[in-house]
Length: 92
Image (cartoon, rainbow, N blue to C red; front, side):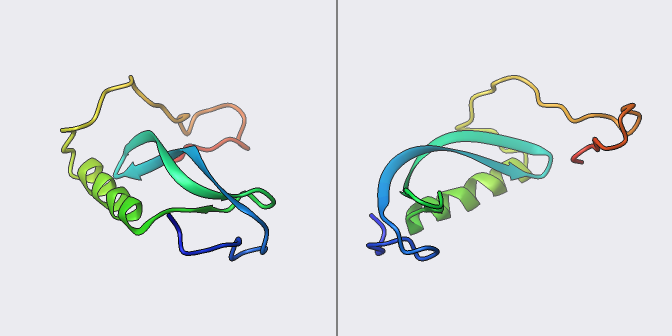
């Protein structure tokens, strides 16, 4: 799948796994499971070129609010600026 035999970051073994990926486009987020080569030592994830192109397509669709081929999972929230603990801030 990936043209690496070893992790390009730390040099350890890679193993193909299904991983969860979150992508943001504008104020929208999509979650998915995707195949990746994962380093068994440092956790680095390597994706195929085709998968990376799909990530960009998903981000653009989210940014443009084109929700075709997406399934609604509910709503997401961030804390308001008025949250009492000032160490916790909103993401948007």
